[in-house]
Amino acid sequence: MKKLFINILSVSLIACFACEPRSQTKPTDSKTTPQQTASPKHDLSKWQTVLLEEKGIKFQLPPDWRHDDSDLKSEKENFTVEAVEWNTPAQEMIRIFVTTHHKGFVSLSGKAASTEERLGEKLQSVTKGAKDDSSISDVKKFKLSGVEGVFRILNLNLKEEDGGTRRGILWTGYRVYQGKGQEIDISISANPKSEEILRTIFSTFEFK
Image (tube, rainbow, N blue to C red; front, side, top):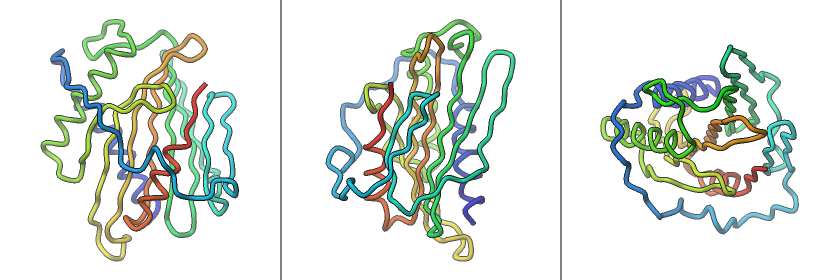
């Protein structure tokens, strides 16, 4: 079941990118922030710290979360995609995709783009997708550890044998790291009863 939900989250991230419109209409900027992310209620002193040193990413997880050895890396001429994952026996998971653009960001029209332009295109595409997909909600701009990104919630009602109702936090951010444009996709998922833990994990992210 875990792999099914991972695949759904991955397809959701890819689909949001693929359906990005070519319109350059300026998106609406929301100043609201995801509920509970600013004030975690858990004792983080017992949590483990995960440091992705080469990627300049650090975050914290509960002590029972374990690194999945199914890390992925795909190298292309103009970009490299890497994916790492942690999960639990209770079917909670976090997966991080890092896409490094070796020659800088490129807009949907094929021209060189800034981080702000790519962020605007992503917000526009996710907002449009949410209008046609009731499983996506709470779409907004959200700055995480100084990196601007697009936040949204994914709610899935699966068959009971596939885990029933699931909730995911999705965030896509854009930055320049070590002189190269990077797109960072974070997906955290669990049973809706664990949403507070998901939001606390999300709040611990730090980027160099």
